[in-house]
Length: 325
Ligand code: BDP
Image 1 (spheres, protein in one colour):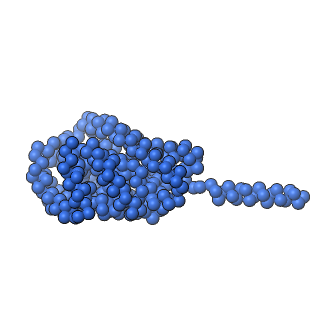
Image 2: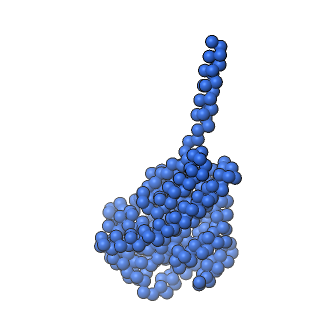
Image 3: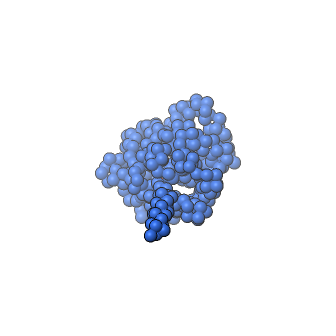
């Protein structure tokens, strides 16, 4: 009788220990839908962490910004309310101001130029700055070349944007850039851009080719001014709160899975950019190429002056600009 009682108590204790030991899955934030290169790369990151930790670390992916828009998610990650996320450098740099200069228009010529620096010393320094602000970078993703697109007419030169209401991300550099075009910046979350066009709140917005297609923005704004004004870094990050809870072996697993997911993301990106452009063109999108960048770049000069005056980033900006490989 007594033995039986001891057995019951032991079983209850074991169950209790099991319940306390079972970790709730970590939470990962993402703004994109299934099939988008970011989403697929994050899924592969999650799988690799799961199998390398033998199921000990599970991560649940919340896509389509269901946990809140990107500005909110940047704050949630820092607070430890979510653990993993993929962010664009614009909202991220509001939380880590040392990054702002790397959103400057026409800084990188293309993704190859950008990754030559992100995969080198510049990327390491940016990662240090981000870590000091609460974000541990596990991989640099491709945010592509961002261009303007408008609902009512095909712009063919930067002067054409004067007076237009242009949607931007909540980011100082983007807001300044639009003002320097003589236009009015309208800050709206990504998920509200399509409505913004449909309700006539905005005339134009800006983004990369893959998002232009995946969001259906091209249906409401079929005229794209293909200026690639920003070649935009994005990053897979985890919170420093989570990082401090991982042991060295787990950290190495996260880092390796992050690097692998970035490689996958970049190759999916190249393919998807081509198919996205073909799909929107077939559906009626029209493009104008920039004939002469010089008046456009001259308009941006107050932005360059502002950041070039900052001794913290001036050297890095010169290194990027003078790299003409
Ligand atoms: C997409 C980026 C996403 C940005 C979004 C935007 O991947 O991170 O938030 O643009 O314009 O292309 O808000």
